[in-house]
Image (cartoon, rainbow, N blue to C red; front, top):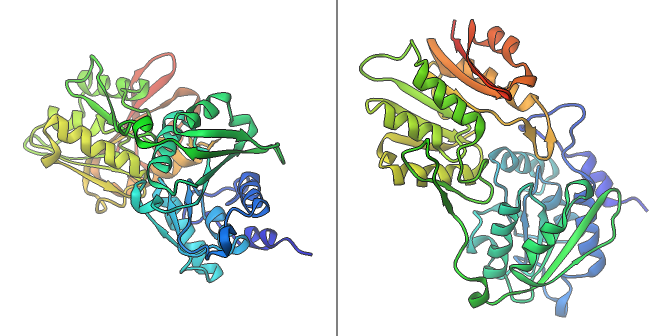
Length: 390
């Protein structure tokens, strides 16, 4: 008998997310999570309908959500995907498969989890993100909820079990299959044991005159990462030549926790600053960071893909500290896509100020799609380039 997941997965696409021949819209963990749920019959309690009892978190491109509809018969699945492109890929795949009514995206809050008896989770890369998710499930889901959290064995650690035990009384590990494994968490701890929500968290850095907020999925957490520190130093020591004297328009692309956007707004009171990121956690963190610094009225924050938050030719300056991975896979193509998008956003004569790991050698691409560049800072790990739009 044909495996229904084989047919489903064969029809999935990553679009409009970054794609490459070596990347897929599903992985072995998606399959193992769905098969584990189906074999255990978690949804068959008292013969009840499975409507509105399944939540999916961290679905990359729709494999978990559409697989739950296909294999488990789940409908009205509530889904949380931090990346905007993940949401769009799920929507496109659902339309392609005629499954547009089976799911709805929600934020990571009670609207996602209230009453859920089964939660399927692609394990995140960070323990902080896992901690925030686990506490949310324990706080808002059904008291009999089962959380199935799957990942690639090479990325899993015993620390993940420890994090889950902060929110659940019972945590067990299943057998590995196809280099993936599923952790099962149940018996959510009562509210008095969970304590207050652990996110957002706040951090301070001696190089910043403001506090930094972060949620579990915010890149870099509540810190000033090494690349952003070097980029900010370059702006102080070698300020951009192309900024208008009276006012300027600045785009912080991939804003993370907001340190670049907020620093720009504080340094240039007349500037119009737009911060954008496809991560819901990044956007929420940037708003909090800007509010705490007293510049939220001058920093627009958007959840958007690449530079779609601004019109073509809008920016006098784009600040970019790009990611170098897609999911858990290191891939320079993600940054290449953002750099190309900067060409659309920059005004003629506008500047891209870019920081990157020196070994990634982005300079030839920058000069091809933006314009002439110069190195403005470098240390043992990172390089900062300034490139002027032709």
